[in-house]
Image 1 (tube, rainbow, N blue to C red):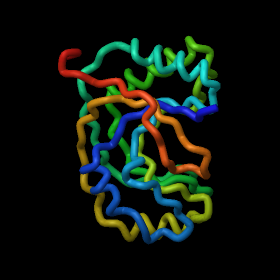
Image 2 (image 1 turned 60 degrees about the horizontal axis):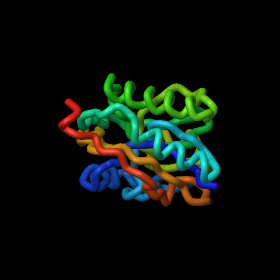
Image 3 (image 1 turned 180 degrees about the vertical axis):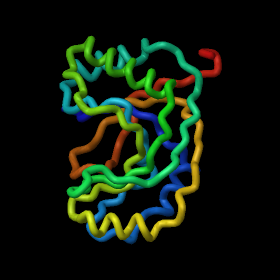
Image 4 (image 1 turned 135 degrees about the vertical axis):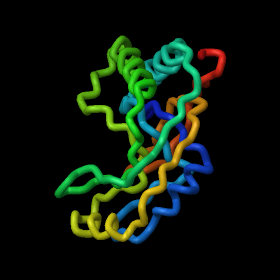
Length: 182
């Protein structure tokens, strides 16, 4: 039973730049730069039949041109109980529309709705053992985050191996974003 999600790959050059933030935070489990992505829709554990239906349904999504995404800050989820360090994606209406389409497609297949608000980001580390003081100190020690833009050329359906989170992820199917869709 694979654990699936849809997302946008972070190109290697952008991953290399984000990798510069790795380290210096005790208790953090750092995501490998090759596994950086922007999650569009977490799906969860599904059986093989539903996985095939999802793969097919996503291939029939509306054609779209490539998206330019911009990362503009480091932040963390969890407040007093931080659980993830991430690079924030600047809100973009085209990205929000793409995410909403994935939500609609998955609901039509009977996948339970995602109740969390879509907050586009690239997870850099899981923080199960890093407390709020350590995270605050880490953030204070970082240089100003350089705005980092990249062009998303495809959307992927990923599977996650059984692990404690943070990868490795496998691209099960890819759906190109093409100039022809403009």
